[in-house]
Image (tube, rainbow, N blue to C red):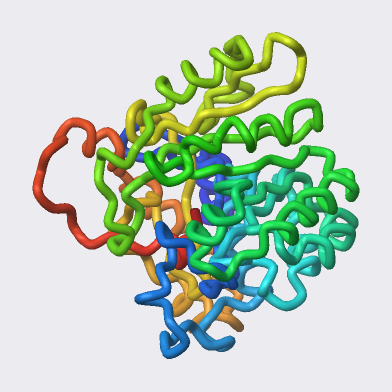
Length: 355
């Protein structure tokens, strides 16, 4: 009895990491495959037809994902985001959304997608309890879009997906994520903003980051958010908005003329590691504590070794808590402090860990 009481007391105190950051957000990659080949994420030269992706049995099944999410919720997680690869390639995704949305403590389940399959799935996802949708869209110029999607994207289909998400009525709204690269798509940013002004869709402009090891990142390719804001304000004056919660990634601005709001994600020029509350679960069950991580913790082996053991949830919960308590990641701040260093350790690829 005393051990049970101690166990419940331990669960009641959410873990904080070495920098005092709580665990609040869990990003779950449900699929390492994608139907695009964006050069900054999955360049065709590497992820060609012969590349070996995970097989179905190598990925966590929905029962296993639900177990991890339930234990994470007991440790303080309130928000879950489903990512990939392209998450809508995972069969039966609305069922997973329904299960995650029903977990005690989880009050927000969101999705990041390239949008092509949204016309087919948006109504079912909304009915299942999905609150928010974010669509990745880097350009409205067909030539630039084709380049930035690796020649596999369909711009009209993505825009149709955005419209389908809006029509489905997600209560938390629809957002656009635009990764901005100097000399590639930065000149077209005003076109994207103009397309979604007065629609209720929020565009978030993301500084090009050195995620993974294969995108050929160089600091000169980054357009700092401050520069973008100045360009945009010359067209449509902006007014800063306060964050809605501690650790909000995007810095929010509204158009002074009332046409909506936009956001800036400034991981390179203004790192926000100090308030990061996100953990990431890969589709094969490894837990990562940073987007720029080099290693993860294998949860799949633990899940499958103890699947029929009544104490397995306790061990899973303890593992999650221990990993988070030992966390000291602050890569983006360290990148800034060590600008000019010649090399970085090998990082996990974005398609595998989720953006």
